[in-house]
Image 1 (cartoon, helix red, strand yellow):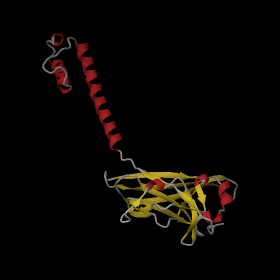
Image 2 (cartoon, rainbow, N blue to C red; image 1 turned 180 degrees about the vertical axis):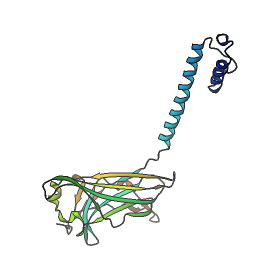
Image 3 (spheres, one colour; image 1 turned 30 degrees about the horizontal axis):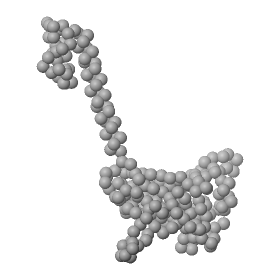
Length: 230
């Protein structure tokens, strides 16, 4: 304190800084004005750094992460006597996603009548796009009817087209009560024709309990019968 004797305001100011920063409380160790200024700057930077680090860490840790898994492939086959494009999704966590919604969009490169190339987006209708809760698996079905843009394209046409199918799932995680979302993209190489998904449900050895094996979510088998598609 010897360097600040007689400078009342600065004495009190630097003492308050060290009190707030809990630096050597009870004694004023810096001996000069420059020493006090340096300690004040270090205290301010340190407090700001700790506060920013704590805020960033909390924001990062508290951010909800979805563990929604999509099947690696989508299949095209008959469903209820009509051709349909299907894929599966499931919640990998041991909780539920409340009010889950799914959307499927077709991104495709097209040429207008004026010869201009552009990327068009089509929202594909689904047999069901909402479920009260997603706890197990969900088979998402897009009927390929006359309203579907896929109905006008054959397998050969799709193989030559520059397109992508983007699936999005969102809902409320019941554990953290926050909205989560996830998405997946399918290209032509990810689509299997005349296939159907393997059944995930099976009974245990006693036959009294039905189990679900999510490791089979990607597995498909081929069928001899051709779907009623172009």
